[in-house]
Length: 213
Image (cartoon, rainbow, N blue to C red):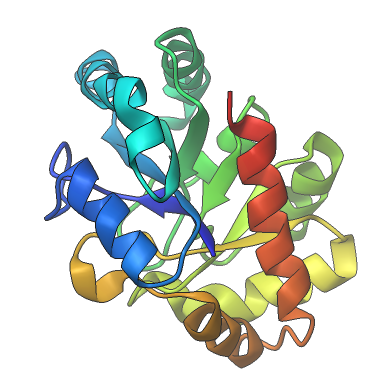
């Protein structure tokens, strides 16, 4: 599995990057992206810290990307935050979608899908207009394995089937117990009504390799 949405101690995760890498490899995963929660106050700081890992990437068994998850930023400012993240050297930019588990401001999904975003995470009760934008702009939509965020996976899966946008599956991992492998991902995808779960995992790998510099 290539997990494109993982948090470290640089936001609200429990693990430093090296431990994430080791635990990912031990679970049988080949790559991951650290996408810590970010807004204008810490985008530069997070990416500066994570960038130090690039110097040693050849010593790790798992490949990795560095990035941010733009989180709870007002919709009208999401474009500026996304632009700042790319400018600061992000490999991947995720936006924290309108999950029903948190009070994310309405309009966040639409704003994110209009920008140069890699993944819209756990988009909640996604609308058909948002589904159309995801397809038109080539933005990947997340099936989440995380408690609370996963409650709308079924709707996201049905919209993907109807509107043909690309799905990825991510853990939104914050702790060691959140890490899964292909087998665990397959169960979540099938539970969401996605029989062709291998195609989704292939989407994760394709997007990872596309974004890797």
